[in-house]
Length: 243
Image (cartoon, rainbow, N blue to C red; front, side, top):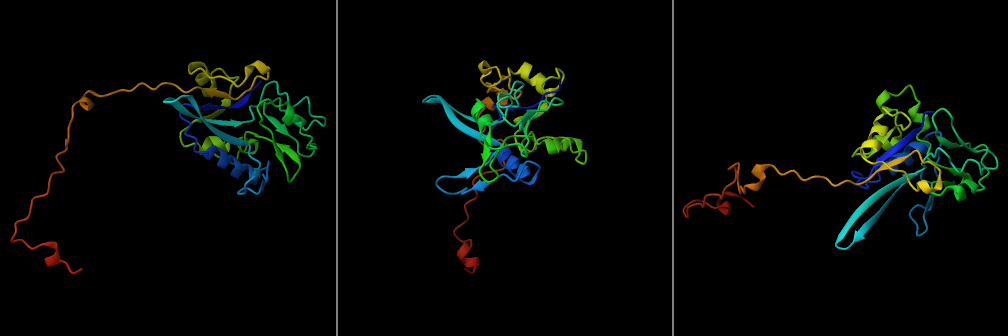
């Protein structure tokens, strides 16, 4: 079975939140929207987002590191949110493995939210339904778009290519290759949910110094030098300029 998923490279994610904003923009105007914002700038903001970026520090001072951690629905292969839904509103598509919510069936009971160990469900206070990441299903299958644009909005918006999209069940796909070669992992595998989304861990980057970088050169191009000092009899700036 095909299993579409996101692969997030934590080594190059800079926490710019472009994925979060593009997701909000696309899905608000798409089939999943509108995504409500209630009191977005107040002391107790309330809004619906399919993707959120969490930033935190790891390590002990002075050896600390900032980690930016994007998180959305992981489209689990054994999603616990599906069997607990009393109306069948939460379901997993057999053709591509995407987990979705049928808003016409959802009664807003929040059972799926309680069952999800990743906190990936969002309750829309205005429509009183549960919402979640759809992998931009209305975009990835849109044949009117060029093939290169049939990706989730968050993938297209990422300036560092930290997000990739593909079939993790295809061993020859780019995402499967990256998971194998760079130690991709899933969140909390002990829960047995088999998340489809994977993360690529931060990696130490080797510093490569070219030999000529070891030789100090104050002015290698010889394009800058101290200006010649004018003679006393030469006119000054005040003599030739009208202020």
